[in-house]
Length: 250
Image (cartoon, rainbow, N blue to C red):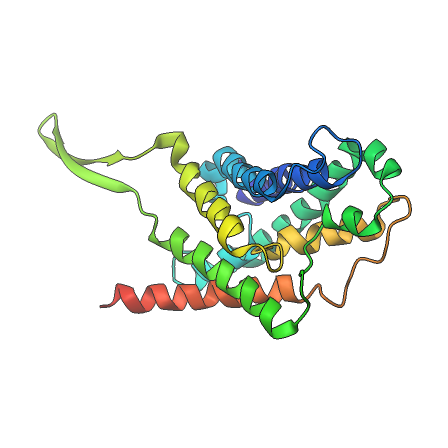
């Protein structure tokens, strides 16, 4: 599979499932209505796991512009591929947002709270403050990217047919599980401030979808806040990459 297509598909799956669990919890008359923050964070963790599981072998499953930029800064990814990856991720974010609307269309129609409708697409802080909100997004993404950079496949030397080779030892297809658990942990521990976008495509793509979709009685898409879940995660990812490089030379 073309890596750009893989990133498009992976990010679409991420948003469909991740924003889908938010819709299930906050929209009216759903089976999961009012299930709470734990269900949302669990859903997002498993959404990341599923997306990475589906496309990791084709593109590395960045599904996040902050990850693509950080890996390039760390020298683990080609800068020439970054623009294509980011475009594919953003397109996946928009497409995922459209799919959430189609799945929950009847529930958007019976939900009165316009803020709840917006929450199924993008993040918003509980207490607004540019510095605090920016820092929350940056530190959450720092943890994500730093953990990703430290995840390495273990290899052990073996002797097969008189030829020394390396045998990779790991979780196989379940290698996606650690990333999902990291996102779950960030959500549970650090997500209560801004809703932990920690991914520009996860926030900006669905926010664009919210702006263009015919959602009944919707509010504005809160564009005054939209730069924080874009710039904050990229800054946190870059700092994580620089920190990783620094400790790697020690």
